[in-house]
Length: 270
Image (cartoon, rainbow, N blue to C red):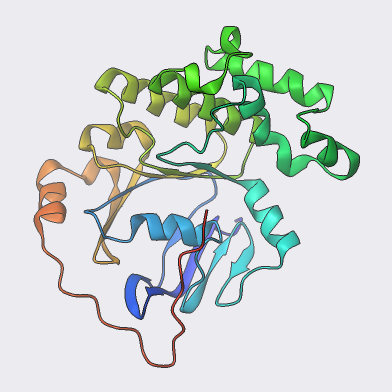
């Protein structure tokens, strides 16, 4: 049996001495699609930042795709390798508005480029095989005809499609999606969920959502966080409206301060 894609061991993250995430033992299997829910301040985004190496734990550690992340930051080469294998879909999408749709998609290939090819990418000169693969990814999401348009000329739904094309080109082992349907209408949100599941086919997927109707579209397991701690961990079929209402209506007690021996994990720029 392969090791889990994600496994925490005594994981605790703090900001200015305040505990924002406390997950002693959480595992996510390779290829599993998991939805993370919880009110604002529950620690959802902190969890994703920790898994991608943007936040260091104050205590414990987390294994991500076989790499151990603890109090000490990974060396730059190891961090580059981790982020090559971890795809992210963030609320802001992190697209470059002045670049073309094709160039934004090709950003997904940067982790694979080395030497002269990596240098040429600074001038937006990519290997022919990567450009061809990017065009196929855009075709898959229905944006091939917009490949040479500027990204800032796309609608919100089209920008989501472009982000999914970039993910398809990256071919990550783990996908972290933080409210990927934010600001989309119901129809566009449904389409974005389908694209995300397609882009993450064969990969492990963690998605943060607030809309209960999207939960069954994005995963087979649901993790509820409250006050930085695990409130429930259930199959998607066992998560109902009453359980979610209790999760969101509950007012968590103030999180305890970390011990004096702990070093606060500052949020690093993404």
